Length: 230
Length: 230
DNA sequence: TTAGTTTGCGTTAATTATACGCAAATGTAG
DNA sequence: CTACATTTGCGTATAATTAACGCAAACTAA
Image (cartoon, rainbow over all chains, first blue to last red; front, side, top):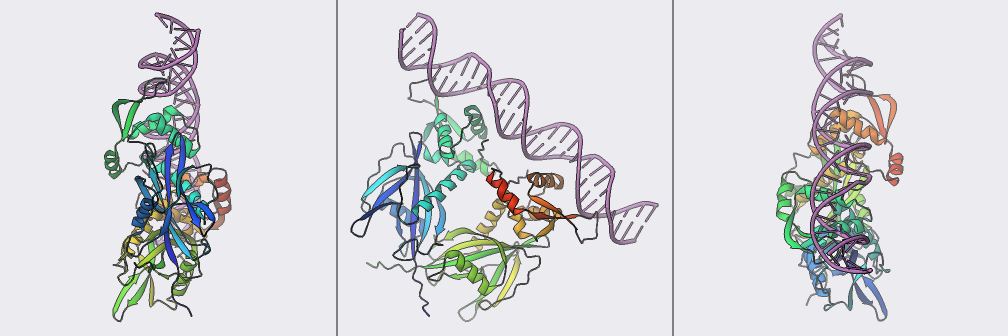
């Protein structure tokens, strides 16, 4: 009886960015064997002496140079034992957010090409990465409604209409602008700045900041962030 | 440079049971080396050709003989690379529910002793199992509020007061009995049976059943189960 | 028969969500 | 300079939901 465990462990990252009223995900183009190229999620094998989350950070750094604003474990994919045809590989997937507004990504050492891909234009990906991505999107959607992670997709200072559009596009729902604003403002976790939007159409709009410290304080007192829609 | 990955992968199970108005978790007593004994969560290494969830089922079957009514992946613990002092082991934890009301557990092949342990009397466990258990409890609490998994801890037919007590004890909150009943009944996912409780005190109470099929139908139509408390 | 207990069904007030109205502050076209 | 299109910011009325209780019914035990 063969008792030696022969299973490899990898991490994969789903990095979301929001830009021009669209949700994007970071993909890399990888070479398999001599000819085949595939788009895939950034990721790779875990090293013996690094933690899982360090492995994600390292892989992302090797392949891109994004600055994460949020990262969380998503799920571990290991029920399909043939998900990688070469070896049995179990993948611990993490999803992360970045402020994509002023970000230049370049392929670092490992990957040939790195690209932001619109969420509704995802090609066939390597392995079970389409499945992983689907799960990440679904998690992002629900998390958006009960934790203030939307701010991690926006610049430090943002317009209310940006926040509103972010929610509309990611959740694929219509929201009443006025009720949304009222709701968010009632949480008392935003700060008004003195600055105004550079956009020159319509009434000038104030820029807002998310006050994370205040949010943490309120949370400790029992406050619970929640956005719902009809 | 050493490139060979030398990481083992295990699964652990947190099995919850509810009995006599208390939440319990299944623990096993394991021997380490020659003398040390420790209470631990059931679990073990994943075999090369079994899926993760199969590994959980197998380990549980080897160590106990419980009948699961619900099982879901909880989290993968691999950030502390010394969580097992002997080797680097990454553990994919699953949590599960059983109807503990008419259940006899016996130690099967592997474990010396198997025991239900009250959730507020948990001893120091092996490895990082106390941490894992904490996370499972927290997940159980939140899941209870937005999915009808409470029924998986109860017998097929149950009293309303049982359901109410289950929520009270697990969530550690007071609930208004009448509002709770109204809320649950308004979901229209319960079936009244003709039977009555065998308990001979106070007004006889009807037994109810959870209609899972109806719940699924409603869910597809956009229904969302949710229980909140002040 | 009375007291004790738990169930099952209601009512009311407070809070929250939904659906809008509308003026203010800009740029732009004429 | 004026009228218009556009977006922001604030408000209000109504519907829906939640929270807080009252109380009779149906049993057991004494």
